[in-house]
Image (cartoon, rainbow, N blue to C red):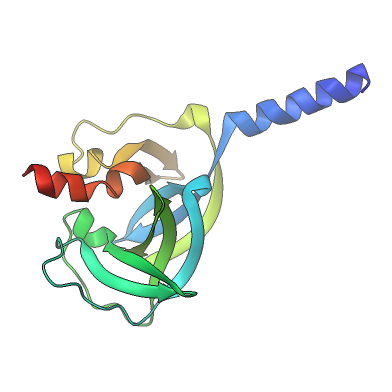
Length: 163
């Protein structure tokens, strides 16, 4: 490898390290970001089977290509009321400790490449239920995108046992 090739490769790594890709989703008109490396699928959630005695955040179970997946309502997880959405329920497929989850959202947006250095801490006035599930925020053209902490979003089972 020549010196110029090494410099170009180093520059390319630095560029990718300085940016982070997020899958954007919308819940109750709020823009949220999920780190793309945590997202396995984006799909239409259909035929969700309810689970008796499950925590309220659990919408039920669904079958995704022969695999049983736990459907989690992001609305309920954020303390928002359920709404009847016209059309199909959208889901983002995630994994946590070898278990498959479908995070139910109102809409799925696009993949956004954002500067890591532009990530700001959660605003002090943010509801504690939201800030406990967030890594911080990005300001985008007059709109705030809350970056979700996937581990915290999916850790509600331990929260329920501790209560």
